[in-house]
Length: 450
Image (cartoon, rainbow, N blue to C red; front, side, top):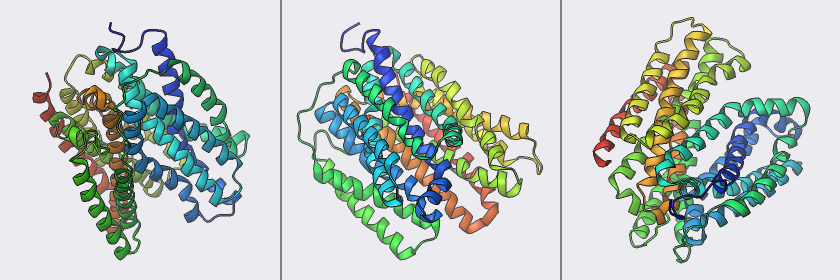
């Protein structure tokens, strides 16, 4: 094996350990804050509506920072950006633990989000350099396993910590883990070639305006806020987006990877990713309202009924990654998305008074399909890009996920405004339809793969 084609063992294992530790922390922090919001709001004397910014600030700053951080990784090294992101995330976690007001906690969450973007943006690019090409699917499958497990156990971890300690400890536990991960990263992470080009700050600003205003505008429409304000935000996002795209056309290594979007299989993989995560969120956001509002189940029971989906995804993801090293991802992804669509259709056809088992096996089918799709799709997005553009591919991978999740969640809000509680059925059927369309798009990729 050539030295440049992946890391030798045991360095590969140490490198994946630091990647895993940072990824778990970043994903967990997106999940545990939701559970702790009521406690945090009461402790800092904030209203429930205001406290939402503890979650929103983190998600929003990650979204607008992913592509700039990925571009910085290409210019100055993925290893360096990862280590800086990890250090910022650890400091932000300490600041969160020491916060005593909503304002300071929100500011600390912004810092955390910048660090998390540094970690997530180059995560896939680092895995591409850690594993040899013929084992890339395996590495991506491990990543998907970590994300799935972290998402599934996030609420449980938060509840466990809150049962024995106050909410600042939700963030304080990241500090020692972050320091250990940083020490391992310094000794084990691979070094990649750099472009030597200067970072394009104007493109970064345009990127922030485009994605930031797009997400806040969509979310505002879903929340029923001022139509004039939200339409203005979306209009400014459109103008900034057009300016951003035009600027990227003249750049060799653009921040928004227009060059990669010209590659048919990369473009189709991005589209299927956005659709799949949109379909997932249509179900994730609407189902708790069905379980609690229509079936009268408790929050604990709702959490347990939601768990089979991410848990099955986590179990299937490594096997799907292994399969993607041997079979076309378009085929695997298409089968997975059709399976997910079938699971959503079965959820839409639940009996009037379903048992727990009725729900669990349907959720597991959705998770099975999503797991079979995710790892092969991520592998294709990374491997279809030139090696020197791994950062742009990694950034787009994470951006597509967040864009799909945000759009799906906003669609649920819009549907509730139109259909009220009947919106749950509409959202699930819509999710099945979107997943079905994404499956067809996935099959189109087979002819582009050798």
